[in-house]
Image 1 (cartoon, rainbow, N blue to C red):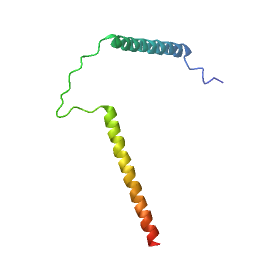
Image 2: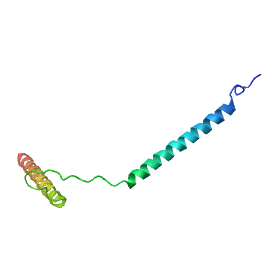
Image 3: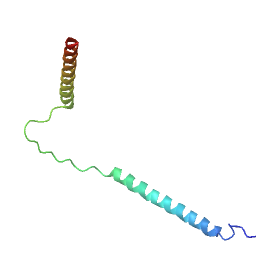
Image 4: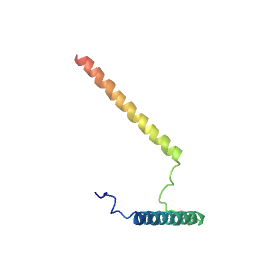
Length: 92
C-alpha cells in the first residue's frame, strides 16, 4: 500500500518555499528603500492659491459661527416643542 505523500517531491517544495521567501524579502527591502529615499527628498514648493473676495476666516471663527447656528437651531426646535406641548395641553 502506497502512501498519499509518496508522490510529493519535497525537495521541490522546499526549493519553491525558499525562492518565495527570498523574493518576498527582496520586494520588501526594495519597498523599504524607496520609502526611505522618498522621505529624504524635499517637498515641492507650495504655489499660492488664488482667492476671490474676502479672505477665509480662521477655523476658530468658523467653529464659533457653526456653534452659534447650531445653538439657534436647537433653541428653535425646543421652542416649537414647547408650543406644540402647550397646544396639546389646551386641546385636552
